[in-house]
Length: 333
Image (cartoon, rainbow, N blue to C red; front, side, top):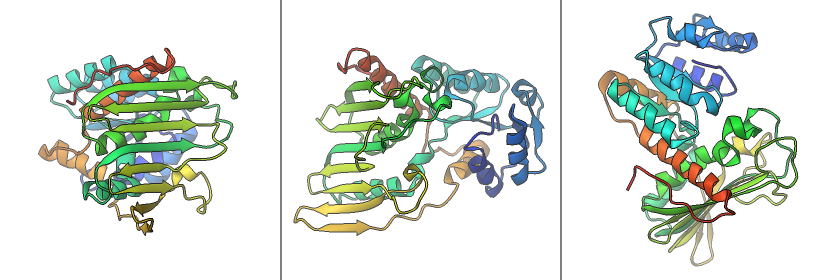
């Protein structure tokens, strides 16, 4: 594991619970983070220099959890050493960086994949299943929202130069989900960034991305720190009904850490609460083992995550011209 930040324990527990995986080394410049890793994996070697760890040998796969503006550098360092790579979101901050990494991985016959963990969230898995079963007919409008009204943190997440900005921070999750549900060709993207209140950080206070597909379907992703009235996490309209995913405020802590409460609104005016599907834990990490050892295809691919970056990059370009449409250069047709 290259860097052991907030998501470190999640990966650590997954590695320990997945047959065929052994956590052999952890690198972080913060000794306390190394201690946290050893609480779960006491036999792992620890390093405070990433180059030294990558050169230590006996590493088949590295999980890169450094800030986004360094993803490209560390993934390239690992791939050139013949090491398979799992990247945290986003893959990189530009499509050119993504394309270079993908070409390098292909030339070396190595795995390059992004940990799109929100693809496996119980609320999204439930929504995706409902849509694919035709429960609400043909989806023509899909909205995803995250945020509230609160002062953003001063960590790297809120620094445009490091995180890529408010669109990149949560968009890496929600735009990936949109593309997993809507298969139509994308026509263009509109993006808006608004800076109105929080001057202690460089991220936008309110960011919005609109995806317009060739068949007229639209999807909107909003990330806001200025939303005194919080919108539903999911608001999806279909020709035979609607799906609403309301934030669960009863569980305590940050609402973003809890799955939404899902309901279907029928055309006759009735509303049905939908129980969340049970999601087997660590399926992503299991698929890593199957991919590396047996060559099996993963449901998450580098090409998908690369297109998410392309859309976010196009949205940022659009935001510079006050939301005028920009056509992203996608791999998917």
